[in-house]
Length: 177
Image (cartoon, rainbow, N blue to C red):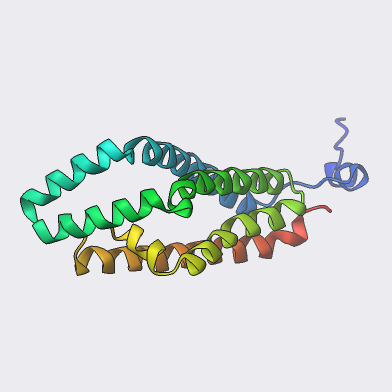
């Protein structure tokens, strides 16, 4: 006769139970997104040197001289602005903090949720404070269509960030203190 042992009791005694599949899926999606966003952030820092920006402006000038002029003005404003200079680095810092929060939630630590929520939502405060300049940097290619697309992207980012914060919040009951 084989002894069938119920692992549920052992898990409860040891203080751990299995991580819910939904939480695992959320964490894996977040890990993948953090990796992609990190690579895009590094690329953005490398690609947005003054020389590369000037090259982009000259390429834009062939298609839309007025758009190139607007793009050049915004590039000059961004380079002279302290916030414009540190924004890409702040984005990566918030991304790394977000990754830390997801890692903690993956290990079922409740503090990870609060870290993640802060890292996802605080950057929007900088956008609100930055106001016109922050939105101008998003649509720096010029033209109403590009700026409208940038606004739609911003709205989608807010929706996705809020949705993930809510979904992680639903899983708080499965996380330890």
